[in-house]
Amino acid sequence: MKSSKEFILQCLFFIGIVAVLTILISNLRVNLLRTGMGLSFNWLTQPSGFAIAEKSFSYKPSDNYFWALCIGWINSLKVIFVGLIIATILGLLAGIARISQNILLKNISSLYIALARQIPLLLQLMFWYFVVFLSLSNTPISFLGSIVILSNKAIKIMGVNISVEYASLLVGLSIFTGASIAEVVRGGLNSVPKGQWEAFRSLGISERMGIAKIVLPQALPAIIPGLTSQYLNLAKNSTLAIAVGYADLYAISDTTITQTGRAIEGFIILMASFLLLNILISSAMEGINKLTIKANYRV
Image 1 (cartoon, rainbow, N blue to C red):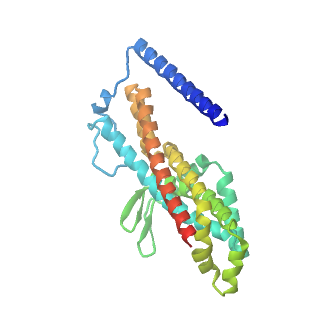
Image 2 (image 1 turned 60 degrees about the horizontal axis):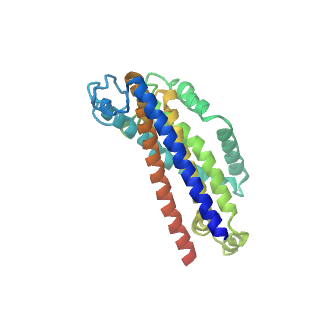
Image 3 (image 1 turned 180 degrees about the vertical axis):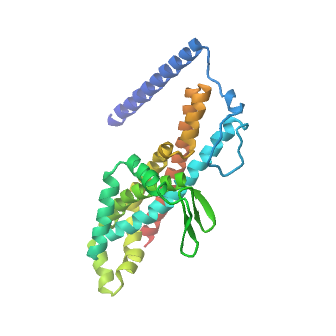
């Protein structure tokens, strides 16, 4: 009886969602017809007419809007995936330091987490862009035997040129997300029974080795769900690139919509792109989570 009621409620809920979507799509279609615009993506093949400062592949203003959006998509991916790596490393180190027996490391990590999480991300991005990177000297300054060369026009690391816009966005996103990841890591490590900690310490295993080989593998099932949420947040927060002048997908989409007047089609492309990216991130993390659960079960 209970299962029948639940099935009926689920059916009604599904029908309600379909009805709402149908009404919204119908209204959208009617309004587009009234304006005489309709729903079309033919404008993607038209010349964009604008330049893009940050690009990994050849691009000219005479290229079409589709290729311009592809350049923006590639720029977004460059920030997102490099940011995920840096934020993960930073968050893992800060999370471990947060529960460390070393008072200095514990206090430093606590201060970092508190500052990074309490200050809005937009302000942090603007700080790194206007206060830090644009304040660098016009004359390039070399560090570590010319491995790192800094100036307010570009940053070169091991021969790779990085724009100050990209560097500001990457550093800001990584530090902000790394602080949240640190708390996820700390919570996961604290979920491991104290007996596991006491066991490796009684065997004379070092704190670093014990955490890496014994505690962390057991904590991963508790860490990964929260880590996935932070990865998705970083991907979505990357759209703030427009605040520092970085030509990501959102910034280029904004320019495209302004020039073509195709706001609906532009936002459909934008939302579909980030939806696909977030689905890929979630699926990958879900697969990793299943592997860690199986590995711990076998142990």
